[in-house]
Picture 1: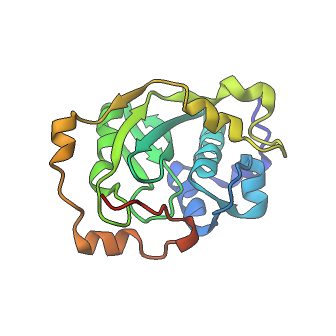
Picture 2: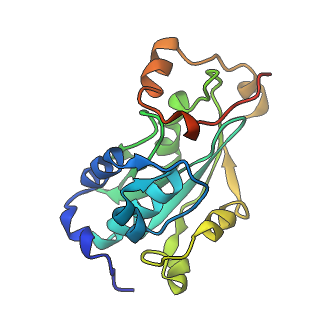
Length: 203
């Protein structure tokens, strides 16, 4: 399918996409805009950011791949992944500062995902990442014009709930996790949009 996003020409490498996503507003509305409308509205949540990044990465010649990260007592997260020199990297929009870009230096998908683990915690400091999906190729949704439609794309998010996910660790390991460091928490939530943050339940 030919990439119809004319604005994609302004991006030359993956980090350019990340800089764009860092600079647009965080979208705290319950909606899923297409990449075209993310660009027009200049705002995105993490899922919209992953779709946007996947679409632009496609214009570079990559497959439009996303991975779903599932959390406990916290928001899930979605990232766009790509390969360079046979290693994985990622681009992501996040309402926190530490769940975004990853350089393409990870030899396996699991290595890439585990780079997020220590920095994936809720506002109580509970480390919350529990599982991740295999890559989802968004070309399966080309018939819905997912890159440029004006229709809501929430059904793609619904699809992510139906696929298998890989566990991060066993239950015994997860029960003994420490809470996040206070200084790292301050850095992580610096500049966050409060209405877009998950409100965790205290254990």
